[in-house]
Length: 437
Ligand SMILES: Cc1cc2nc3c(=O)[nH]c(=O)nc-3n(C[C@H](O)[C@H](O)[C@H](O)COP(=O)(O)OP(=O)(O)OC[C@H]3O[C@@H](n4cnc5c(N)ncnc54)[C@H](O)[C@@H]3O)c2cc1C
View 1 (cartoon, rainbow, N blue to C red):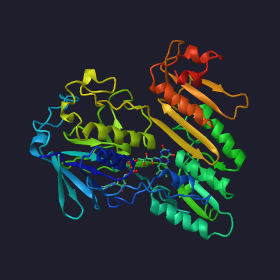
View 2 (view 1 turned 90 degrees about the horizontal axis):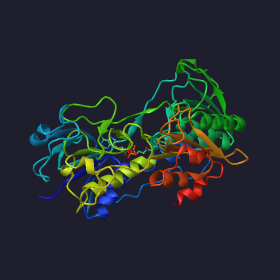
View 3 (view 1 turned 45 degrees about the horizontal axis):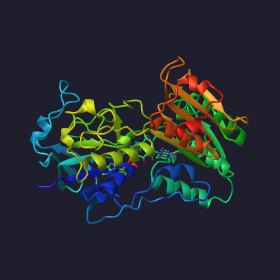
View 4 (view 1 turned 30 degrees about the vertical axis):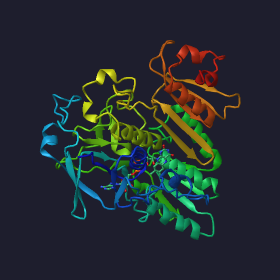
């Protein structure tokens, strides 16, 4: 019997996996209430106010190899053999592989009452927004799903004057909404808990640069807002919340993890035959263990490509995983296929006219960073190292308003010529030329 690969979730990770498996001639079933009609999320927070396209469909279509099941997955039950070979505290990263790669590993229960058997299941269920109550604005809502965005858009389109927009939260999405509203001629006020935006996302020089740019553009900030109860009534025409999101997690044999699906370097969960990708997964082993930028498009897409290569037709059987871990650091398994997810993770955020990127491992708390910038100071890069001394190696780069240099950073971090702090401290060191070595 052949593999039965089932993907739960048709967002970016699930769609990418399905598309790539299809290209390899591997049959796959995609479960999502909106399968075939899902769209990108990033435009939702960037293009609500500027009249440009906020709705970019993924264009995944059912084919000879792709079957859509338009339903909600409720629970997974593992077959007996799979349940027995689940990781334990002792086996950890070396689970006992299933004897037969094509044996049913489990079944997915759907809301309709039906169930679907699988040999391999990919959890790609993404995240859902946290929806705090804002007493002064009972219809406040996050900009996370297309339905929320369409509701907001209708309000924006029906207004015949500039709106006064309130935003709770100063992470990427909140800043994108506020800065894009102001860029389109509306007023925007951001209510934040601390005293500066993007505190958990970006290092001090980058968040300060953004803070200054947004204030200069007219975004207002109300700092030290400790509770939504403190937000004044009758000020805003539209109120948007952006206080974070949490992974959507389907229980397996009745158990749901506390935060996200922990996956190893091959994106495998502790349950044989069950993998997780994109926003619902946190990678706990391999080069970016626990430290990778999370909940970002490039990582979800990269996870999808990785799993298609790992599981696709002709690829080495995943149950060899664990036996050759020590050979896998290069990203290639013994059959030449990838075993370790090792793409350089990166993130992008467009906030009105400002563009900010991260690549590799960057930390909002890093203080031994190095800044390189052009003479005008309007664009610059912040370099992060694995230590304080001159021989420490570059591990991550933040790039402010300089897209070609973000491309260079990704090339450098993904290549074999990683520069040291000593290189980057040299004013004559040409980072862009180095990226092409
Ligand atoms: C407004 C917004 C702006 C963003 N901007 C950026 C950006 O600028 N840069 C960036 O790098 N990243 C950005 N992101 C993050 C990026 O969109 C996500 O990282 C990416 O979409 C994650 O893909 P995913 O496939 O893991 O999850 P999702 O795209 O969220 O897809 C999950 C899918 O699973 C389905 N699903 C959930 N539960 C079930 C179930 N039980 N049964 C069946 N199906 C289910 C859902 O219907 C959904 O279609 C943004 C996110 C949002 C919300």
